[in-house]
Amino acid sequence: MRRPNLAALALTLALTGSAMAQERILIGSDWGNVAAEMADNDAARALVGMLPLTIEMRDHLRQEKTGNLPAPLPAPARQTGFSTGTLGLWSSNHFVIYYRDGEVSKPGIVLLGRVTGDVSIFDRPGRVTLRLERAR
Image (cartoon, rainbow, N blue to C red; front, side, top):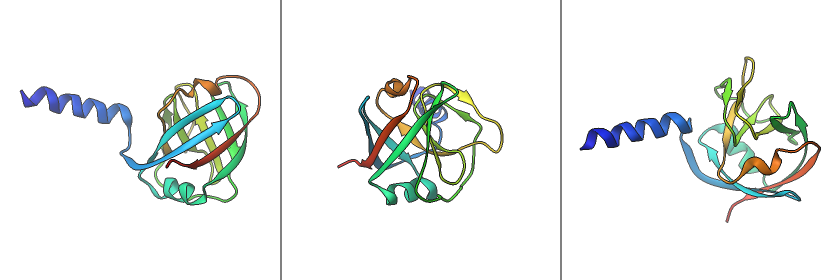
């Protein structure tokens, strides 16, 4: 009986990527609001330490919204694949929200967290102003 449960746990961990910390943030815009669970790494902790933030985001390649942070973040391990809802760091201060699945070229992105709500609110052309704050 325990074997199927272990297999389900392994599959869940493989699909969700890095372990998530308990830290949650809220991402708000005129288009809607979502929550996100932050990754357990130095870059995610540094981003949370900057909150609250307002970031001007633009659409890039019809798969993501990108914007600049006020200061660089540490750069732990990178990955090339991402899935819908991934929060990432392209360069040391380049924040990304992916609203489609995909892959980037090397060196890849730093995983900052994952949106837990409906990230499709960002799946539209144009700029948007995001407000990031700690969830209460």
